[in-house]
Image (tube, rainbow, N blue to C red; front, top):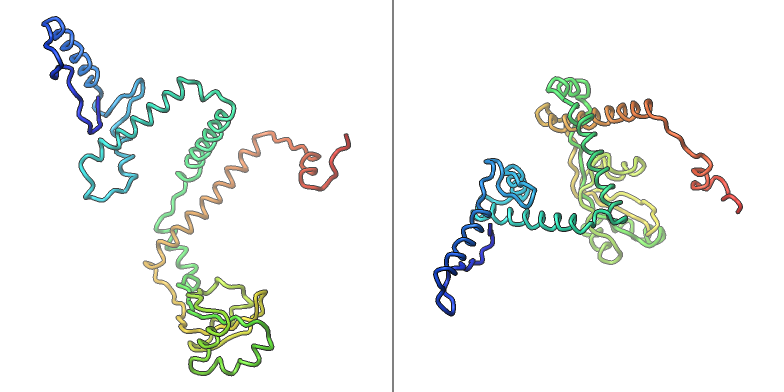
Length: 295
């Protein structure tokens, strides 16, 4: 089989001298054998066979789907993708024939990959596939936490960074004048911070951003790089969400929480039925809790 776009020259094409009947017969036989090998009958769910390995229609379709191609993609995409899969398979088979999998460094990587794949498969089977969040679960959570489920408010601010408190005291009154804050930023340091949402700043700084009207200059906050002042340009209060607005977020939250709980229970069950021995002395040495043993 040939999936490339390059034309394949037929053994029966013109040559430098005419062929005798016997030579033509041999070439015809060879061409027929090659064609038969490339077009051997395969099961309906198999799109190609590379040596002993079959490539299913399902795996080819999955590879194409994962590419997220636009609807305007050319009709040759399945053939192109299949060619890549065939190339990868050929290389993998050749690596196996050359015994690369038995090299120590590669064998360790293969074992690590195998362990990771098995862990993911087991967690999917024992945790992910067992977690179900129903509409009733979501509604129950919403009813119990209705006053807590809200879209957080936010402010848009600009910051001014002054070198020291003495400078801050000297220019503080000018910051409240029209364009005073902008002029100070141009003279010293600062600029737009962007949106700051409720719940994203340390509690001791909340008063400088929330509960103050737009246009307010707040500060100072003393940090390593200087004295910070802020001007609140926009202030948007938070709002309680309706059930429909909150449904997707609650579902995601409950799913994550249930998975974490089930995962921990699963781990506890494994620990309960498995003998685990820890060399406390070696562990303490690694943690620096004990001096290394004398030689």
